[in-house]
Every structure is written in structure tokens, then in C-alpha cells.
Amino acid sequence: MSNLKIGWAGLGNMGTAMAANLIKAGYDVRVFNRSKDKEKDLIEAGAQSVKDLTELVHSCDIVFTMLSDDNAVKEVYNETNGLLSGENPGKLLIDMSTVAPETSKYLSALCEKHKMNFIEAPVSGSVKPAQDGTLIILVGGTTESYEKAKSLFDVLGKLSLYLGGAGAGSSAKLAINYLLGINIQALAETVLFAEQNGISKENMLAIINEGACGNGIIRLKTPSVINDSYPVAFALKYIVKDLKLAKEAGLSSPLSAPLLNTFSAAMNESGLGDQDLMAVIKHLEKV
Ligand code: NAP
Image (tube, rainbow, N blue to C red; front, top):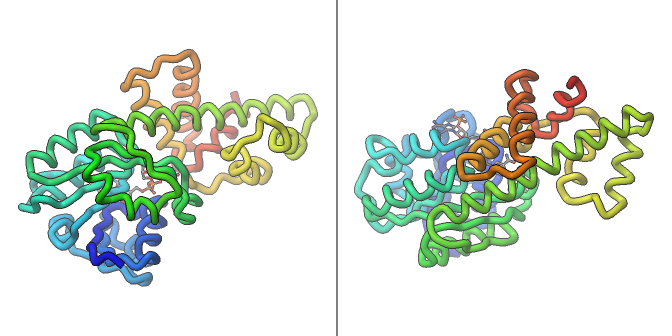
């Protein structure tokens, strides 16, 4: 086992599951979360807690971040009391959050200024693949840093793909989440249309899942739709964030505007932002 010391900042739904896999794989993992209570499970699993971000980066060789959005990532990477506040040349910082390609480029340049290495590595896959270590990891940055991180990515995911320079991983992530949003809204609309005409959710989902239109995300969300229960795996507010980022990155295809409008309304008008994104069906059944 490598004696690399691994830092992890951001222990939400994804970060907790991912860091747990590094601990299980035998790595020396140090954790920091803004709300300290979320560190408890990982400390019990063998991680060490550090008092702040300065200590995290100082005491580790590689530091991962898995945070909600661009503002959170910029705050954690700040030069005053964040990951870039000390002198830590040569260390590798890996951001796995879903952010704008421009934010990844900005972080890369900031790290370069501090003589630190940076790659972005957002993921495709939700909490279950994070727990199972079967995420798909979309890497942008230098090939040298990717090679250094690859054995860790092999623990976190079933596939890591090097896609190009800074911003490339984030661009790929926004594209796949566009397809995710389309799948979820299409599933919701299909089930509601069928129900309006007397076809039960159970029967419609059997037709979808047994046929060529079935796919992984639809199978994953089938129990939620049947039970009308949407425990959060990927919060609806995050697909709104990602569709906005995609729009800012140039997405203007015919389906993109109505998709963003629907999920935004589900969040702002129906108050579903903190539920799973499949809860969009509850918004659509009212419109
Ligand atoms: P989450 O459960 O909401 O966790 C967000 C994390 O960010 C928490 O640890 C939170 O700390 C931290 N955070 C937020 N603002 C912060 C700030 N200003 N300073 C420091 N820490 C801050 O989110 P998640 O579902 O794990 O998702 C994390 C990222 O992965 C997001 O970018 C999301 O789009 C992406 N993603 C999610 C999924 C999924 O299925 N959930 C799948 C793929 C990608 P506190 O605990 O203190 O609030």
C-alpha cells in the first residue's frame, strides 16, 4: 500500500461515500468538512480529522474536494485561509465537484501560481456508484497529475478518462448531465401521460424497462417513481445548477431551454430543490 497521505474536503452525499472507499482501500485519509458533525462516520471508519483547510493541505500529499458548487470550491481554494493559503509546492489538488469549465481553468491557474498541481475530476454516477466505487471519472489537467492520481481513481471509479487540459473534464460533465436531465424529464412526462390515459406507473415502467427505451438511469429511478418517494441521491437543485452552467458554456440546443425552465420551476415554484431530481415528476403532475 502506498504511504500517500490523502486529504478530503467536502463530506456531503458523494464525498462521504468516496472518501470511505479510500479508507477501506487502506489509505491514510484526513478529512475536513465545514459542518464538523458530518466527519463522524469517517472518523469511526479510521480517518483523522484536521482543524482547518490549512492543516489539511499541509499534512497531505494529495487533497480532494467534493463541494456543492463553484462558489463553495472557490471559497475552499482561497489564498487567505483555504487550500492555497500556505506554502505547499508540488502538492496535488483534485476537484471532483461539478463546476463550470471556466472555474476549473481559474483554479488550475491559481494552483500554478502557488507552484501546486491541479486536476479537475468531476464524476458521472450518483451515491450508489460512489458507494460501490463504480463512478466514471472525467479528468482535465496535465497527464502527469492524472498519472499520479490514477491509482486513487481506480478505487473511486470503474473508469477514469483523461479528456484534455483544464476545463475538459468539466465540459464533459456538463454534457452528460444534460443527457441525465433529458432522461429524467422524459421519464416523468411519459409516466404522467400514460397515467392520464389509464395506464398504471407499474405497467408503463415495465414496458420501458423491458424494451429498448429502458436504460440505467430509468431502472435506478423506477422504485422512486412507483413508490412516489424521492430520497435524495442527486439533489434537484444541482441539476438546475448544472443546466445553468451548461447554458453559460454555450448549450443552446432546442431541448435545453425548456429543460432548464422545468427544473428551475420545480425548485423555485414547487420547492423541490432539496429532493432527488426525480421529484420533478411531482412538479409536472401539477402543470
Ligand atoms: P451535498 O451532499 O450537498 O454536499 C455538499 C458539500 O459541500 C458539503 O460537504 C458542504 O458542507 C460543502 N460545502 C458547501 N458550501 C461550502 C462552503 N462554502 N465551504 C465549505 N464547504 C461547503 O452535495 P453532493 O450531492 O455530495 O454533491 C457534491 C458535488 O458533486 C456537486 O457539485 C454535485 O453537483 C456533484 N455531483 C453530485 C452527484 C450526486 O448524485 N449527488 C453526482 C455527481 C456529481 P456542509 O456539510 O458544511 O454543508
